[in-house]
Amino acid sequence: MARLNVNPTRMVLTSLKNRLRVAVKGHKMLKDKRDELMKRFLELARENKALREQVEAHIGDVYSNFVIASAVMSSEVLEEALMYPKQGVTIEVGRKNVMSVDVPVFDFKTTTDDTANIYPYGFANTSAELDNAIENLSNIFPELLKLAAVEKEVQLLAAEIEKTRRRVNALEYVMIPQLEETIKYIQMKLDENERGNQTRLMKVKDMMVKEAIEEKQQFTKNAFDNYVNK
Image (cartoon, rainbow, N blue to C red; front, side, top):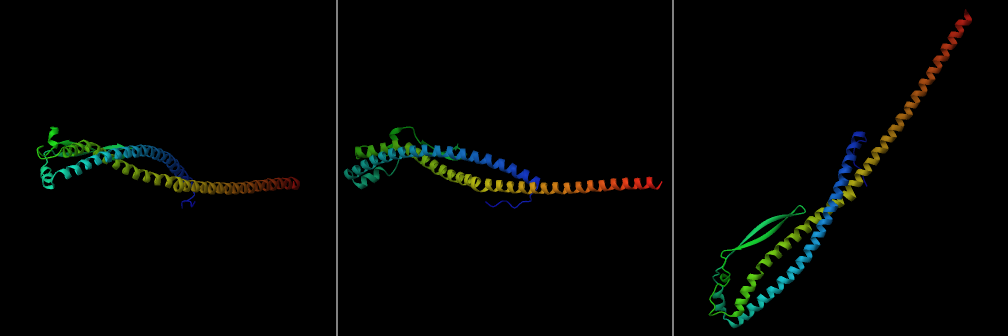
């Protein structure tokens, strides 16, 4: 792993150690977040599968009733019956936060509270199968909205998991090893400089001791010569 291109000083070493502590802490937090996201994602995936199967089964019933209604009614009568709907629907989109991910929440309101308004026609010229299809379609509408919200949440969580995974890998395999390698290099250089300084200090000390001994010897010799000359 290539180290960072920095000056091997104690100030830089302290800064890199602080960065390493933050990176390790961030790595742990991101791993925990990734694990929680995966847990939530798997729960939603199972919920989405069950909900989709349920909705598809109900939609199959709706299609079956529409096919039968189309067979027993003329196309003109069927089109006329469905041409002017009496009931309207307003979709409301909210938000909720799941592990720092904003996911949509869908809700709806009908223009009227009368459940009979789901039928935009009279019952004289229409078949019971068309009534069943309209009723079933009205009943599964909340499930359709819930399915849409769950599938969107699954997509957003999958994207967040991938982004978190890349960050975890970048910290684990790039940044943290780089910081560790650089810290090791700077520590080695500082130790090497310390040993060099220690060696120089020892040499200077030896020279000073030697000079002190020589001065003492010279002083003793001079004192002896002066005594003899007297």
